[in-house]
Length: 477
Image 1 (tube, rainbow, N blue to C red):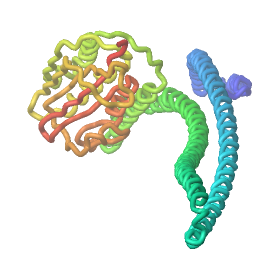
Image 2: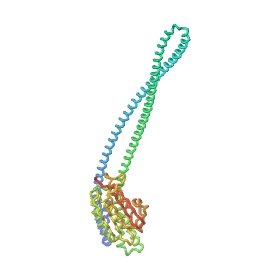
Image 3: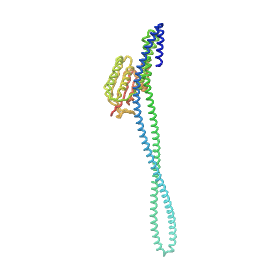
Image 4: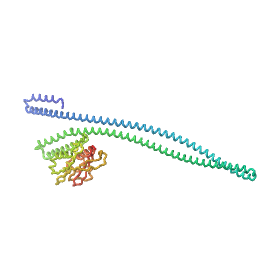
């Protein structure tokens, strides 16, 4: 409001007072205008009080979210400390692995020295064997010489015989020594073979440890990358939540208020100025009212969809039949208008978010009523399947069991190829001239099911109705 406006108003009143003798009609109009301004100021003051109340509520909500963010930060700090502990353990493991490798290198060096010494001993034995061969050859030569001399040395036969016996003993000892030497060489060859196998195995183990160390480094690198990605996702989630809060505020206030004024003024023109409008003007204003109503519905649906993310997820053990009856009571006029038949079996209890699950049931039942076949009263069946099938899913419950609820109808159905598309935002299979809608209802349904860590599937054929199957995890087992 302009602060100089009251002074301007009083100035206008003063001028009007001076000229009231000449312009009584203008004075009356000025008084009415002043009264209207006072009334408008009262309305604006009331709107300001409402806005201040709502602002206080939003500040409390922001404080709650700030507290939740502090808790999340504490948890993240705890996780970082755990990661630092694991990194310290990894450093200790790497140091121990390096120490073991050094020990193995020392043992390999000792083994190399032993191999060199064994080679030297084998060379010495080969030299001795060569000398022994030379000696054997010389001995044979001497024997031949002695045999030649035997004829001449008959007298020396007895002595030679004795010498021969001695030599035979020595030859026998030499044979035994040769056998023992051969056995020792074979044993050394076996030990050399075992040593070679041990060296090959040691080399293989070192390669395996190097590979494991490389894999450990890669795993650490990947873990660090994943942590960075999670931190980025957490930051992006915070930004998305802030944008979602801004969107919710804009939808519920800045967009709703001008829309309400459009609806109010359009209605006033059609009511008060109906006779002054041409037929085309009346048609245009009716179309304006219809478009405003569609926009109102769209904003409400968008607000509902955004609230499925921001609403506190408080799970309560709820009687599903009671929830269905509340929804049917809210839709009793639509059900009566369509002459619909709704069959509800005993659904029992489930741990759900009550308001969200009620919204889910309402959207699916409204869907069945809206897409009914002309000339056929809608027939809606809500059943609880007693057998809880096990489904493989990343969000499955601790027990792996799901409560299975189905909602089926006899409506127009849809082409099975669109069974996934219908759950996307703003996806309508029909034009507004055929069936009015915003394309958000089933997206809200899917979001609510996801909030329950559940699964929703659908089956349908054209003109044979549609069936929606909802699987909610059984909690507390």
